[in-house]
Structures are given as C-alpha cells and as structure tokens.
Length: 509
Ligand code: MSP
View 1 (tube, rainbow, N blue to C red):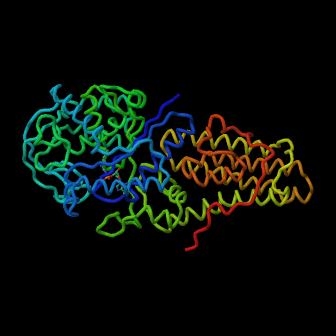
View 2 (tube, rainbow, N blue to C red):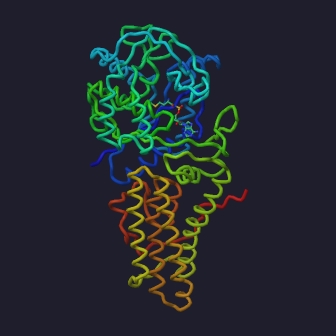
View 3 (spheres, protein in one colour):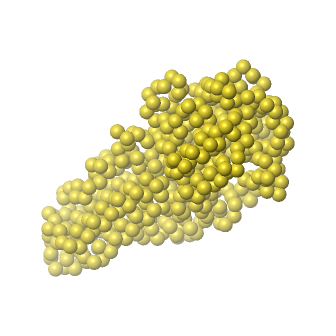
C-alpha cells in the first residue's frame, strides 16, 4: 500500500489562530483526505512551536510562564482544528519530551561529526520572525517580512556548518527539481543558495525558554533548529527506528507559507544531509492572504478569525472558498464579497441546484423511485466520458497540489450535468410518457451526483456526506475509495430519493 506523509508548519503559540494558519492546515487536511480515499496509508501531522524568545516575551507581557501560555493557546489551535473537521493523525508540541530528546540527539550527532562548533555571533536578529538577517537583507533597516527593527546581538553561539552543504544542496535541487514547489520558489531558493551560505547560529544564551544544548545548559537551541525536527520526532527517534518512523519518513510533502521557505528548503535539508537522514520529497510553499486588499495585521485590526467565518458562512463554504479562490502557491485576497460570490454562484446555484433539481424530478415523475433505466444514447455516453475526464483531471491536479484546478474540474462537471438536464429535457420526456428514457436520464444525473460527492468529499466533507445520503448511499462517503467506488454505474437502480433541505442556502447579505 502506498504511504503518504503530509505536514503543516507547527504554529507559534504567542497568538491565537487566524486564517493563515487555517489555510495551510486545511490544505493538508484535503490532501490527507484525498490520499486516504485514494487508498494510501496516510500520516497527517500538525502541531505547535512553543519555544523561543517570541513566546517567552509574549508570556511575560501576559504575566504567565511560557509553558502556561503555550498550554492555553494550544487549546485554541486544537479547538479550531476540531471545528474545521481537520483529520490530523497526531499533534506535536515542541515542549513534549518525545520531541526534545530527538532535538538533543540531532544536535549531539551533528556536533560529534564536527558540523556544529562554538563561535561568536554578531549580527541582526528579528525576534518577531526568530530569524537572522544580514544588513543587505533588511528593507529600510527593518525586517523584510514583519517590518520590525531587528536587534543587534553578540554572544557565544554554536554554529552549524551550513556553508559546507552549499554544493550538496545545489546538487539536490538540480537532481530533484520537484523538491521545491511551485517552480518560482525553487528558483528563489537556488539563487539564494548560489549567493553563498554562511554558517548558521543555532543556539542562544540570552534567554532560557528553549531546549538546552546537551552538556552546555547555559545555551538553548535556536527555535528553528528545534522546530523543524518536529517532522521527525513525531514519528519516533531515527536511531531507534520504530514503526511510524520506518514507514513514513521521509515526508511526501511539507506544506508551508512562502515566508518560511528558506528554513524548509535550505536549513532543513542541510541538517538532514549532515545527519545522513533522507530528505523530504517536496516542500510546497503557498502564498499569503491579504484582507480586502490590505496586509492582514493586528495593527490594522483586520485579522480574519476563522471561527467567525465558519459561524457566518458555514464550514464547507469556508473550506471551499479558501482552496477555490486562488491557485495554491499564489497570493490571494480575502473579502466578504468574494466569499459570498463563490458561495452563491458555484455552491448554491450550480451544485446545490443540481441536487435540488435531481431530487425534485425523481419525486415528481417517479415518487422518488426510478424504474429500470432504458439503454444509453450518444448524449449519455458523452456525459459518462465527461465524468471520466473529471476523474482524471482531478487526479492530475491533486498530484500537483493544485486545489483550485481540482475544484475547477469538479465544478466544470457540475455545469456539464446541469446542461445535460437542459438538453435531455426530462419534463418533455415525462409529458411524452417516455418512461424508460426518462429513467435513464435521471439515473445518469444521480450517478453523476454520486461521483461528484466522492470527489467533493476531501474538500467539503459534510456537504459531500449529505449528497451521499440524499442518494441513498450507506456509510460515510470519506470511507469510500476511488478505486472501488469511482467507476460509473455503481449506483443501484433501486435507490429512494427524498427531499432534503437545500445543500447551500444563498447568502443574501
Ligand atoms: N513556527 C513557525 C513554523 C515552524 S515549522 C517547523 C511559524 N509559525 S507561524 O505561526 O508564524 O506561521 C505559520 C504559517 O502561517 C506560515 O506557514 C505562514 O506562512 C502562515 N501565514 C501567516 N500569515 C499568513 C497569511 N496572511 N496568509 C497565508 N498564510 C499565512 O512560522
């Protein structure tokens, strides 16, 4: 059985979750759900990044110990994932002993190999991003990402010999261009590495909130060295092996935002090469959301709260919008108008209406029970072909992590089925008492809806389940498998169709 290991970044606990966090986690959830339905053995990991100066400061401001703050905020993340029906298999916190021991082990392993040495760090550090910058990287003297002014640092630090791995990294990008996606991000990474890599400071002495360096308790491990290792520590200890580690490492895809590309596509593979561990197969960097055209920030007071969006628009509507609105990998703009437009046109008008029309006709013409359908005609064969095309296009899109394209293929088929109804005009067949033909047309519509439910399930699981049940299908649609349930013609001819409430009510205001 194929295996599939997908991860999200682990989120900082200095603040509560917003739409940016929801976005990556949702994307990972859709991939995980899709791969499970595609019969893969899936491991889906998310978690929280709980160490570092940023958390320590945030806790101090609230009069809490860092761990107390983490314990409070972690609940907010877990609650949101539950509300969003996220199907992660594990949730790792970097303060857990199972994580800390692997971090210390990797530190020691690299130290023993001579890839970590003690030196003095002098330079600029952005506390907001927990990242070092050179003067050239700053914009107007400020951090290029969060625009805060970086702080000057000078202290004894342990360094990782990143410079030694420049050639190995370039060779890896060359041999495995699929390692960083989209392509544009690969180009960015390659040119960054070609400019030359300096060794990376991976410890701090100025504060306490971190994993101690083995045998050097006044040094704590840099939060990024600590955090990246979660992708392995959640599976187990590499030296001890263990079932999960053996089965799932290396990861198939690390989903991340574009701002943390360098950490994932340069530092992380360098640590792994140094340790002699296999590299993840792909790092996929998505774009950022702005809100009504503005950068989202607490200062502007425009941070989008996922809870509110779900309460106002509905969970599946929110899930659908995030992955349908922009190609995954590009930046997008979040606005109430945009989410309303998507819901009303695609979900309510196209898909919701299709189900409503199908139910209405089955009930009106046959009291909800179709008689045996007549033979297929050319127009039916064309519909069946369109269903097969949808299946192929969705598969290709999902292999490319192209959610928008996958949903485009699905909605294209929904349109196709609506047109099929218009073209076959069941109302005329009814008037003319062409019962066999009418039963064939309605069967084809219902069967199309069954396939739509199957492909919709990873994105909008609750609505897919409602379609599934409306078609009289047993069990959970997410337990269906594309390999066995994805073929045309599996809908029994004896289903009973009843009226159900509208799938997606229109949003009026
Ligand atoms: N803790 C690190 C990740 C360590 S992974 C080993 C971190 N955490 S974070 O909480 O600040 O951010 C997590 C993710 O949220 C990042 O992938 C980031 O890109 C994403 N987003 C934050 N704001 C965003 C938007 N406005 N839009 C989309 N995603 C954004 O970084």
